[in-house]
Length: 375
Image 1 (cartoon, rainbow, N blue to C red):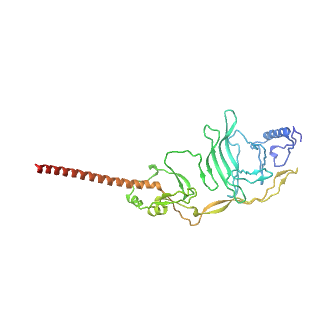
Image 2: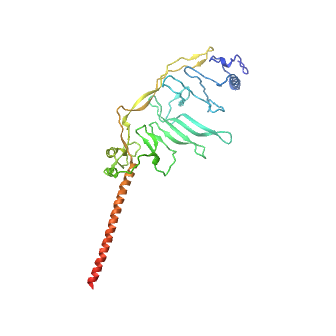
Image 3: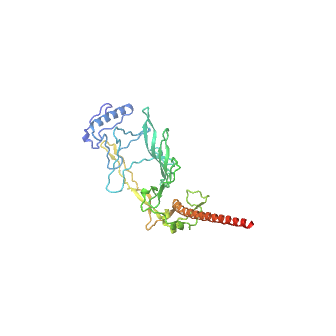
C-alpha cells in the first residue's frame, strides 16, 4: 500500500470486522498514513467515530511506551461511556487496571505500596497547560501480591486551595481500617453514630425537638436505678488500643440489665462468617482468531478461574447483643439526680437558715433575760 493513498476502503456501512488494510510503515510515513486513515474514518462514519466490538477476548489492545497510551477527547459532556448487559447478576461493567513490576514481556510480582489503578482529575491553568492532579482515587497494593494474598487499599486525595500537590484525605486499608489523615478539626461536640447492628452505617446524631415526639420529663426512678452501676477498671484487647494502658468504664451487659436503652445493640465480630463469593465467572480458553491475511484480529484467551472475594456473612441464628455503652446518655440521668440533689440541698439550706434565725432570736431573748436578771 502506498504511503500517501489508501485503496479499497469500503463504505462505512460495510465495516463488518473484515481486515481491509494493514499498516507496516514506521516513523513519519506511518504517522502520515494513520492521519489519512483517521480523516477517512471521520468522514465515513456517522454517530460513533470508532466502534470496537467483540464476542470475547480483547476488542481493542493499545500499547504505548510513553506516559499517554490513549487519548479520548471531545467537546460533549460524555467523552467515554462504558455499558454492560447480561442475563443474570453475574458479571458487571468493569473498568480494570493491572499493575506489576518488570515489563509486559516479563512481568514481575507486585510489591506492597505499588500503584495499581489511579483515577485522577486535572484542570487547565492560566497558561493553557494541564495541571497536576486536582483530586484522585488511588488503588494500591497493601502487601506483596501472591497467589494466596491480594491485599489492597484505596486512597482518596484532594489538592488544597493555594497548593499544587494533593493530600490524602481518606484511606481504606486491607483489613477494613479507615484512616482520615487529612481530616479537619473542630471544638464542636460529637454528632455522628456508627450503627454496629446495621453494617456500621454512619448516621448523624441529632438533639432538636423537631426530630422527637411524645416528649415528657424523665422519671427520676430510672436515673436513680443507673446509680447502682459499678464502674470498672480494665485493659482493652482491641488492637487499636495501647495494651499498656488501663481504662475506666462500665460493662455494657450490666448496663443493659438495668436499662437496655442505655447501650448500643449490634452484632460482634464473632457473629459473622467469612464466605467466599464468586464475583466474576470463570473464563474458558479460546484460540486466537485470524483474518484472511493471516493477522491476529482476536487474540487467544487464556483460561481463568472464577474471581471470588471474601464477604462477612451473618451467622444463622445470630442475635444482637450489647456492644457499647451510651455514655453521653448518662449526662441526662446525672442532670436529673443533680437537679434533685440541688432541690434537697436548697431545702436543707432553707431549713438551716430558718433554724439559725430561730436560734438567733432565742439567743437574743436569752441575752435580754440575762441582762434583766443582772440588774
